[in-house]
Length: 208
Image 1 (cartoon, helix red, strand yellow):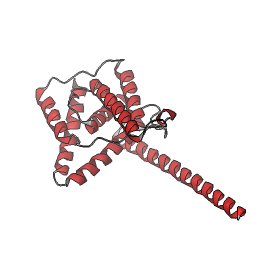
Image 2 (image 1 turned 60 degrees about the vertical axis):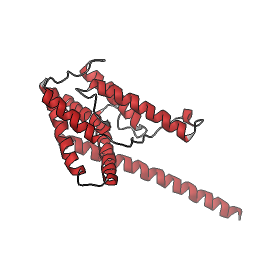
Image 3 (image 1 turned 90 degrees about the vertical axis):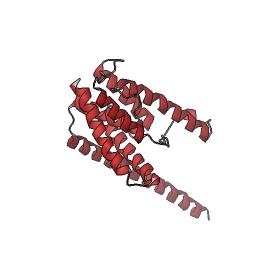
Image 4 (image 1 turned 45 degrees about the vertical axis):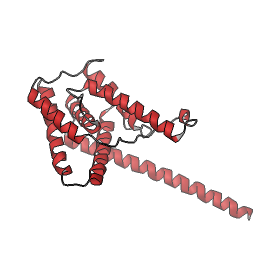
């Protein structure tokens, strides 16, 4: 379909630019750049899905929200029509393979059920959940079987923007607002901790 073709063309173009930029960077710089892009994509995705801006959402929760929203927009359990143009499919597959990260992304995970688990067990559980969520999301995207994580996010963002009529400028403003909201929340939390520590110190001084 035209929509699917435009999606692949947009994603392929973005990845081509990223590929050219990566060729001029060291491995460490590439990994840092990849993680920054992942954060950018997750911020954009949070702004495009219902309930995504909740500060309590970890990345796995955002992926689940994206899956649910994409299903709602395209029909429950129905994948977006695939692309028939072999040249487009080959190009996206080639670019996504070159873009594949050698190091998996880290995900936050909250909940009382993690308290009894070791750090390694929590990390294994989180990564397994992320792997399953990415795989489910790939099945909802056109020709996404070989997409790496960032490509999956980018493709999903592009489709949600199209489906919801959100422009690039509008999304940028939404992300700016989200970042301001997150920063205010962090500042408030730091202020609360500082007051708590000051109160404890005053209490100790009072005992002295």
